[in-house]
Length: 265
Image (cartoon, rainbow, N blue to C red; front, side, top):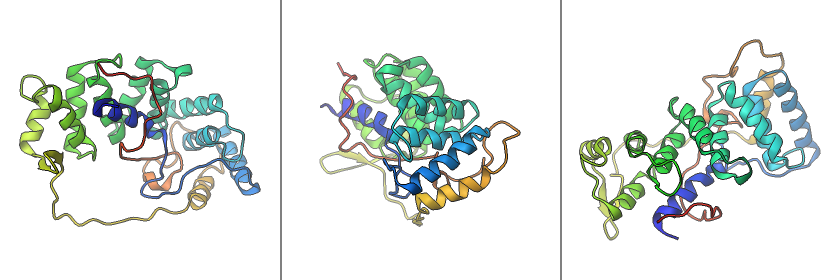
């Protein structure tokens, strides 16, 4: 598989969820405890809470406390996304792009753009990738330049690889990717290991934050769902990603070759 195809396919497989910096993940589970959490989150979703809908979508998608049901998962992701849950917007966009039975490229891009417009970095990066890929069906060089530049400025970990892939077919310049070219001039990458690009190492202090367990996160969420929702959106608009099961981030392009519908010519 070429570097470019691997990058695009791997990016779409961000459907694999991690909770912030934690390795804890929702997995298939039919224990009494998991079923209990499912019922409580389901109650919160029925009361109109967007975060609960996003979490319920996760439960249906992976079979946590219930049977796997991708259709119902998608329904709840979309409901949550329409109420403004940023992670659900991202997830809905991914499903529209990567699942054959739901595939709608334009809808997928719109949902991803909603999340990207609220600075959800993975959405910004993914949009840059799909818009730069001529074979995917959404090719738009101006939009690719816009979103790749935003991802570059925010130092998405995989942007050096994107730069290297682009450089294999064309020189990044002020004429083809003007915004990205300008950003790269302002914040140059370094070359290592046979001329691979890499973010320069700075002296910024790195603080490692350990996320609570999935059960702790669910308990915190359930406390917020005790009453019916009386307004649109999330009750916890300022909650961090690591504090919500409905939110997730993940990086990396290694070992993810499962999707085959993409081709690069």
